[in-house]
Structures are given as C-alpha cells and as structure tokens.
Length: 294
Image (cartoon, rainbow, N blue to C red; front, side, top):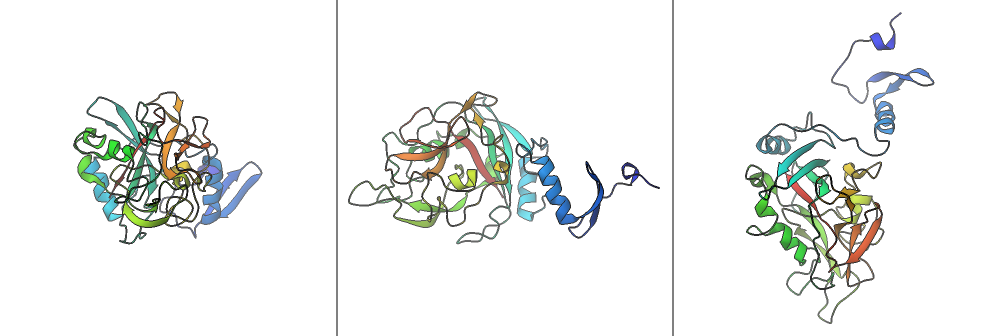
C-alpha cells in the first residue's frame, strides 16, 4: 500500500484531473474544480498570501503579459521599485488579465500592479471641495488635481518612476463616470463614457470591495460597466489596509470613484479598512501607486 505522502509529484494539472487529498476527516478524491475550491478555502483565509519577489525585468514581464504567458506569475507576487526620490515601493500583482477583451477598444494581455502600501505623505484630490468634472473634462477623476499629481510627466509621480519601468506602462482604458452640469455643481453622476484613466490611476470602490457602498451604482466607476474586484483584495483585508509609505503605519487612501449624493467627496478606504469617503480637499489622505503592464 502506498501512503499519500509517498505518491509521486505531478505537474500540468487539468480541471478534469482527480486529486488525492489528505484532509482532517480522512483521505479523499476531489475533481480539479473541487480541489481548486478546497485550496482557495485553505490559502485565502485572511486574504491573498504575500507572494514571491519577481526577479525578471520589466521588459520581460511586459513581453510575457502581451503574449499572455503568465506561467510562474501569481496574484500577490511583487516587484520592488525605487523612485528617483529614493522612496521604495513594493508593487504587487493585483490582477492578471482582469479586463482582457473588455472595452470599447478591445483590451489585450496585461497585468495590473497596485502598491502594497501607499506613496508616502498626504495627497489631496482637489484644492477645492468638488467631485465634479468640468465643461471640457466631465469625468471627476480626469478633472482632479490628484490625476495630475500622479500623471504629470515632468513634475508628477510618473516622472519619478525608474527608467527601466516607464516604457512598459500602458494607459488603463476604463468606463468612467461623468459628473457635470452647466447649471452648477451636481451631487449625482450625469452620464458615463469610455476614457483613458491614465498611466497611473486609482482603483474604483468596486475594484477594491467588490460592490458599491458610497459610490453611485449604474455608472462606470460605481456598480456597472467594466468594473470588477481585483483578486488581490479578495478574501481578507491584508491588502486593502495600506501603510503611509513602505511599511508605514496604516492610513486612509483615495479611490477613483466620486461619492454619490455629495458634490464634495470622493470615495476612500479608511485606515481601519472600511469603505469611506472624504472631502476632496482633505490633505491627509494617501494614494497607492497603480499601473498596467502590457
């Protein structure tokens, strides 16, 4: 008789394969799908585990993402970068092909990275308390000061990224809410449209929590459209709660979504891990670093 711990190892599993699993209530045979659910239950207790450091170059990761060759890359794996300011940022794999084939222009192979902790220091969304767009830029996110703070290629965070990374960051195409009226500030979304969310962006409330709490459902960054929870945030709060700078104390951080029923707030994640909302002019809220390779 062969014991389960004496069985030879095997690679190249398929969903239809059977698995012998040694469980607390005895040894049993599971299908591939059942085994996947069993392992998800075991390993996702408390959230996605911290993965391994990716040692290959950004050029290599980009090539593999475009070819949709993700072997050996898993949710929670990470790559540490250093900004030109000397600040270190641990970039985690948040989603592998989460939006493949989505969009008004079909999205190709990609990997979305979100920092384990936030960039150090507070970053306001707008100098005035507004979550409205403008006559020329109706999307609240694209009209925001924080969008410019992140994406300005001369003085923004983008300008401070490592030179070996910047060529491989592609713009995130997304379905974004519009909130603008010529008659004055409005507290509800007025429409939605496909737009470029930037090379550096923020996750929406739905992309963090999997549902809307303070954002408006039915439009791009609320509860509708091409808007899915990132796997990195599934199963627990360990990746939702972020520090102020690498390894810093837990902090509140901005999401991309405007707050429903208010013309002055954006959605955020509280330092306790709760879905929150804050005045756009709040200077004490942090921002994670998020980008797409592909």
